[in-house]
Length: 100
Image 1 (cartoon, rainbow, N blue to C red):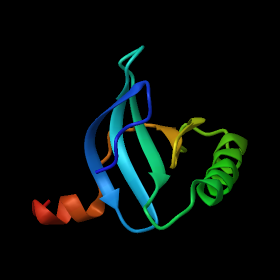
Image 2: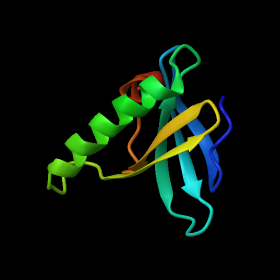
Image 3: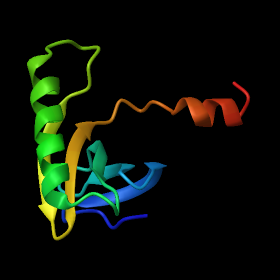
Image 4: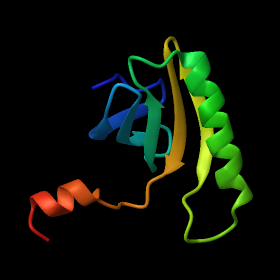
């Protein structure tokens, strides 16, 4: 599990691969739930930053209550993270593991 960028506290890891890490977290100032999508160990932060900026632009261009909000991109050392709205959902993998 990667450390959270300054201003965030990680609650749980939702996904991890060589290319990306997705974590459920809380913003420390407001205690608001968020999802952090950051680069994995094999992706340079500059490349992740470009990918996150593109994803953020796409999400911000979609105005629907059915699409999560992209709040900001934060950078700390070798980590570039896209901060997303946390809709409280569960992964399909987790749902299948518990038999629902």
